[in-house]
Length: 107
Image (tube, rainbow, N blue to C red; front, side, top):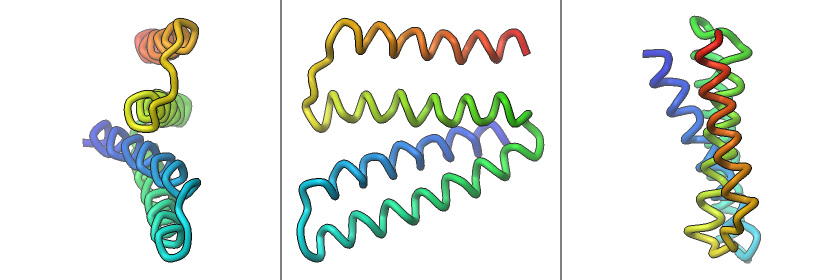
C-alpha cells in the first residue's frame, strides 16, 4: 500500500510541474488557478511522500519520488509542451530510470 502511496505522490509531483508549466503562459485568474493547483499538488505530494516513508526507507522513497517527477516532467514537456525529444534527453532519461531500478534492486 505504501508503494502505491509513493507512486501517487510522484504523480502529484508530475501534476505540480504541469501546473507550473501552464502558469508560465497564463494571465489573470487563469494564472491564479494554475498556481493554486501547483500549491495543492505540491503539499499533497509532500504529505504522501512522508506517509510512504513510514515503511519505505527514505533513500529509496525520495529517489523513486523524484524519479517519477523528473521522468514525468520530461515526458510532459515532450508530449504536451512540444519540446524536442533529442537523443541525449531520451538517453539520460533512460539512464535515470535504470539507475532508480538498480538502486531498488541492490537495496
